[in-house]
Length: 249
Image (cartoon, rainbow, N blue to C red):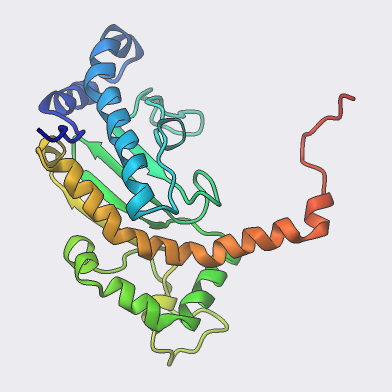
């Protein structure tokens, strides 16, 4: 018999719903074994299987429990919401040349509200956004082909993200990709009901969605990776001392 695909169970969702009602440290610590069994362990299994499958379908992206998975604890230092724990379980898959939370990546989460599978470029700085827009402007036919691919459209629909009301400075309003060039974010996503996470075909669907999305995200990363390489080659950058570094020799 073929091995059972990794995934979540109804007990995963039961735990997350209970956590949402009882978001307290003491409640969580008393039930840490349930969290480890029904939430953490299934996520580890999914990420480890993705690491194997990404080698074939999305080699640009890193899947590793240490890198991809988020801690259950919230950072409440600058938030009015002092609930200590996240009520979802999530993982991010960065480009291997850029690192975690840099550039465009893949991401999914399971919560009591939905299963969200997506990716793209969420919060680029000005230089990064300009480079991506230039890349799209110069290769708009290739980009249009990626986002018009049947599997991309069937699973993810259209490119999402906030847009500017005006054409960005330096770009032609009559450009064939003008609508895309106004984007401030370049995202694609699939959203399903929470019970989707406990379906027997969850992992198959997750991998199929990432496979359809990976060329789109890789395209967005091409100019960002080149920017990183140019910085690494710049002798002024290379010679600049790291902030906070102390020479103990």
